[in-house]
Image (tube, rainbow, N blue to C red):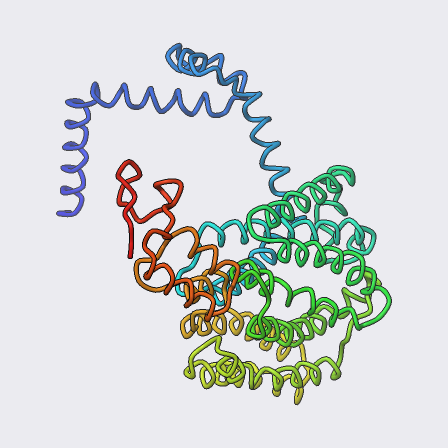
Length: 427
């Protein structure tokens, strides 16, 4: 009985409060009803039912909702198609290896703008190569579950549009590399596009050796980065390239094992079965001395050797388990281990890097005359790489004959603190 009386008291209290404040809640309820009504209408009906303030706001900015929505949808559609044609995640990995090669090939100072141009050009070149690959394999991709939803097999983009994208990205990327870096980098980028398109892509339908050709393609970007930083290819440039080459084989052997049925349906000749596990284990063994070779070549400090060996032993353990028990689960474990191995290896290599002394800037700094002799004649001597004896004779003659010391023709080429001040003499 006491509970019944309490419940009745609560009801009477709520009724009294509602009678007292219902006039405050009425506008809120009306606004909610209007929102529900407008949200259930189409776009045009909603605009007609919208308040005048909303219409004037839309017209003031000149954005017709229907046209703007269509343009936005088109941009999203083609942006997604370009992203998938370029295999953007794979291209980003390629750019990472190229950037690592640039840092390793740099001296004590890293040219950040040149690094940015190198990464951008490499990204466009990789996007072009991947797009051409999908253009040539559109029939095969339509037969594979893993690739049948790509832009070309699914019909989301036309062949002509894809060709235009591939050609434009490739030409712009190679032009950037040629103009902002040097001819060696541009030649490596162009050659890699041709190798990927004309050798690796058709070989996939002919022979399992395509995996080794693809590994060569993947080893070129670090060389591009090194050449962009130093101006040439030193023996140290091949350290990271070799690591990339040997890493790709366990990585792709695991992938070919996991997707063997899909590759067979697409008409690709790939290594599968226990042989793939053996190849993966063998190339993990080839990776073991890479860290010590990097130290011997002067690319990294001595700490990198043991660290690289430990990382390789971790991936090699998964490869050994895969070889012992060639199952889908073991292949998946090795595939994930390879994905973790590469960024860890590059991070350790960059952490223990030794500045490259063979860059053009470092060579110029090493051959520049000492003291305050910064005249144009001295800089020209360093650039022409005259012998040490000739430079010594010129220094002696200048010190003994002050009148023979030539003033620079322009002030900003001298050691004056400001261009409008007189050019000082150095004796």
